[in-house]
Amino acid sequence: MRALASPRRALAILVIAVPLWVAQVRLSAEPRAGLLGLAMLLAFVVLGPMSWRALFPTEAGSTTWRAPFGRLVLYATMGAGTVALVGVVAPQLLGIGPTLMTRDAGLLATLALFWVGGYGLGRDIELDGRLLRAHAQVESATRQAEHARLLLLRSQLDPHVLFNTLNAIAEWCRQDGEVAERATLQLAELLRTLLEASRVPSWPLSRELALGRALLQLHGIRDPGAIALRLQLDDVPALEVPPMLLLPLCDNAMKHGPGAGHRGDVELGVRRVRDGALVWIENPGRFGGPREGGEGLASTERRLQLAYGERAKLAVIDADTRTRVELRLPAAGPERGA
Image 1 (cartoon, rainbow, N blue to C red):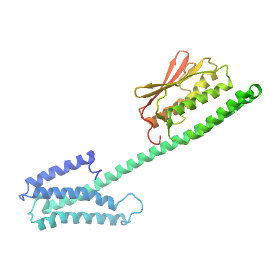
Image 2 (cartoon, rainbow, N blue to C red):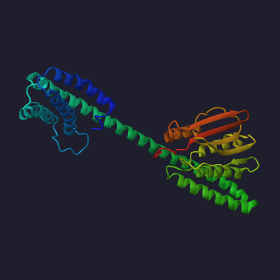
Image 3 (tube, helix red, strand yellow):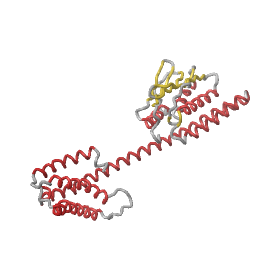
Image 4 (cartoon, rainbow, N blue to C red):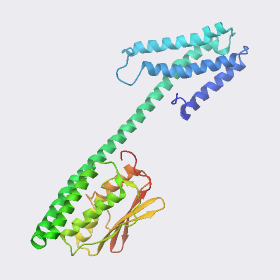
């Protein structure tokens, strides 16, 4: 009934039913022709598509006849029975005289309306349902693929962070045991957080920023003299974000900034805005456009689109000798399952 009441179908039904009902009233001498015509139209509009969908279900395990021809015969019989019951038997029992729709030609026309209209509406509702289920399956598959990419991202980051940091820690063990111990604990906490991030659909922005800061600090362990961090994380809004959203951007900032020989601060910051939060990562070195084979910006844009649709924005700002990536995140969290 909800499907029949949708504007698209309701309008099509009215286009056919209203002129037929008006003709029934004007061309019939019977005073109750209007009520009878309305009852017949309602019966056909409701029972036609219901009969078709009952006899030709899309779900497995149907209890109806398996042979399509047998179902068609039953559907035709049900239509003829409904027309006879509403158009012949009921008027005789109620003492209603002949009308346009209950004469021989009218009964044939209403029978055709039952058969064709029921088939058309039933099939349309069925195909619409299939389309909705297909969209849901595609969306679910997309989210599963994105989760798989998230796991892949974790598997790529873990060795990257692990090997480079362990090499730095080995150097620190000979020079400063206290720094080596602190770096080991920090690395363990980072890997523990990465494992947690791969298991949840979203988490607080403060956790995401803490993870990004930890990754940047671990990069700094390798070359403390070349990397200076500037953090502006005092005004963090309480909102949810997809986990590991900032890691590719933080990794890019280090790779294409200090890692490429550019000197200067790497900055990670956040600021409240009217409709959410503005997060930025800035590094020394000019932005030369998307690099062939680079996945950092592209993967972040895909995840933003999947999680927020058009509600989130990513912008890359080339400011002379520095590159700044800004994420504008809405106060409403990501869509369920993103």
